[in-house]
Amino acid sequence: MPIPRVAIVGRPNVGKSSLLNLIAHEKIAIVDDIPGVTRDRVSAIVEIDAPGAEGPPRPVELVDTGGFGVYVAQGQRFDEVGNDLTRLTPDIEHQIAEAARTSDVILFCVDAQAGVTPADWEIATMLRERSLGRRARSDASPDTPGEPVVRVVATKTDSITWEPHALEASALGFGEPLMVSSTTKYLRRAFLDELYTLLPDPSDEDPRIEAADLRIAIVGKRNAGKSTLINTLAGEDRVIVSEIPGTTRDAIDVRFEIDGRSVVAIDTAGLRRRKSFQGRVEHYAFDRARRAIMRSDVVVLMIDAMQKVSQVDEHLAQIINEHYKPCVICVNKLDLIEDRRGRDGRPVGIEHYDEYLRRELKGLAIAPIAMISAQRGDNVRELIDLCHDLKQQASRRVGTGRLNRLVRSILETRGPSSSLGTMVKIYFVSQVRAQPPTIVLVVNRPDLFTANYQRYLLNRLHEELPFEEVPIRLIIRSRRKRDRDLERGEAIDTQGQVLDDELVRMLREMPDDAGAYFDDDPNADTGTVRNP
Image (cartoon, rainbow, N blue to C red; front, top):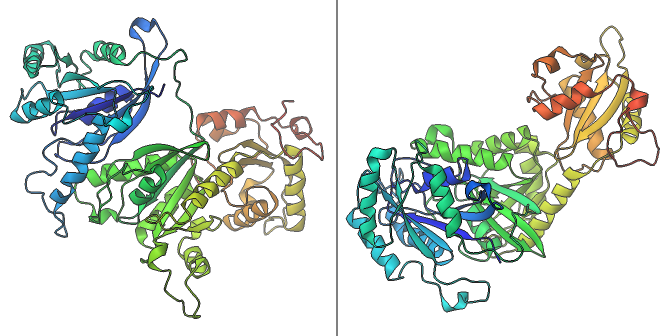
């Protein structure tokens, strides 16, 4: 049995996105008082605890939708370049209908403080008549339940004084409403307990939230083709595609399978320079894009083949580099350049972009380049295969014996030294983590490892280790067992990034005795650190 799906529907500004964030225990959907912020289906898979902990938690897919009926704020029908945003109405309504049609439970949200409005009555009529939420005959299967269960949720019930107002929603004909407040968390536990009971009965083996084999964040500037790529991968119109820039706002997780391997692709908002941001929503969208990069295994940086590399692309490359994420530079819209020829008279190909992109995106010098047509699906499967390969590279571990011999050999060939002739002594080297590969060097003089020498060392490590196309995080520290920075928990790596608590703990526990620390087996190419 598939994971139950819960769709959240209602008119604008009734608290749908806040409700999703409340259930998920994190800020997934963008919340703002401007109508029409949510456009696509924003989904998240979470676990809901059983009432009184008397049973196993149930996984559920939550789906937030756009506010039905109003998709632009008053006075904001047109964007800054004159695009009519009401043209998105059919696409938004299609996404709402698809969410309702494919759900097991529909949470129909009504604002308790505003009362029942004509728009609420219209939505209620559509739900009763099944013009919203009716399953197609093609959906019928042994695993597909009957029509979805509809329950009214009176949002913004901030305290007991609002409960009588919330009960007015009973007139909509779906029974007594569930009451909850996303702001004050009033009645939150009772709401979640009731939601748990609304879920369809599990099969003999409860479905569990399985980690995806690959998580890809697809980022880029506006109209680079990110949403088109998502729809091509998913095989359906999962997100809205429009020539209107800035259509996507949230970071949208879309799960699918290719060749038996599960993939979660995260569609993000198309970005532009900060000085061009129009209102708070674009700032929220930028934050969601950054978070998508942080929680991904591999990042696909979409480049429009018809446009020059912009400051936005450079900024995204910088963020990707800061988080040590494997990256594919994806040149999209191959179909638009296939008949063009370069200065040498040959058809434009990847060789024409390689030198240019390496020059413009210096922080992604080792990132592979892929050329695709998201519209036609050209090379899309190869792109996913490449992403799987990058994750595999980033997951590898190299034995400490091999690392020590390699680094010693590199330093013997060309080692850093001071103007006074002081030479660096390497005590030991170890890979302490994968994803990203994190290598720690314990030396006598960390200050001699200048930025230029670190680049040289990293280049050699990429050449000799199985990390040819993924970033390596390098940490260089002294032999002192009680490092003051580590004691303060303020340790940083060679790029100035603060280390997380787990890595700080590992560094604190690293002994001074190199011989007792690493495995000196010449055949030990992989493995974990051996405790002394």
